[in-house]
Length: 197
Image (cartoon, rainbow, N blue to C red; front, side, top):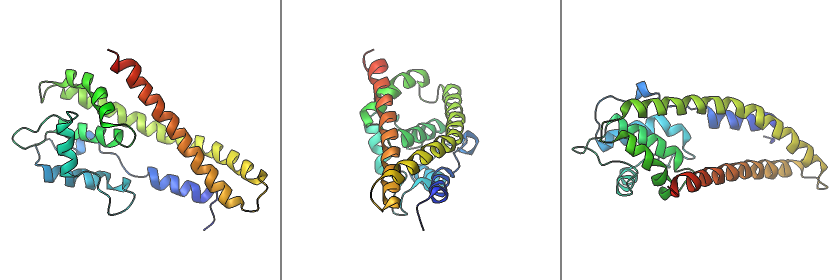
């Protein structure tokens, strides 16, 4: 298969097709750690790069608790609040360090403590995140379509006869560059507005 606009957008569609976990999908009962990992893996497993990858493991959950980015479970059971925090952690850890997540969550924990408190705030925050994420995904196709046209033009200008390889390299470099800039902006927000307080 040639790497062209159709194949590129098929990849984009596959990467963005998975459904999010709506708050109504999260059990309103406390779960044991095995149930938590199974639930998250079933709901977010579409994000795995390979079948061998894990979305979430017991060790990860225990490490998050030790790092204080996840409150300890109550009687070895995890609440809906824990589940929302684990979903946030899942997205954040793709880009940010555990220390940055800890810094980001510090003001959040002030709003939701004591454990079990602040569920209205956390639920509203989570729903807002899902709405913004969906809107951003919709915008992504238009942005990527414009970028792909520019990439095609630049690849055609290169002197080499391997236009497809050039197109692939330029596409990956462009995507990684944009991700890098967005990562740095997120880190700078944490550094400038949370770490100095």
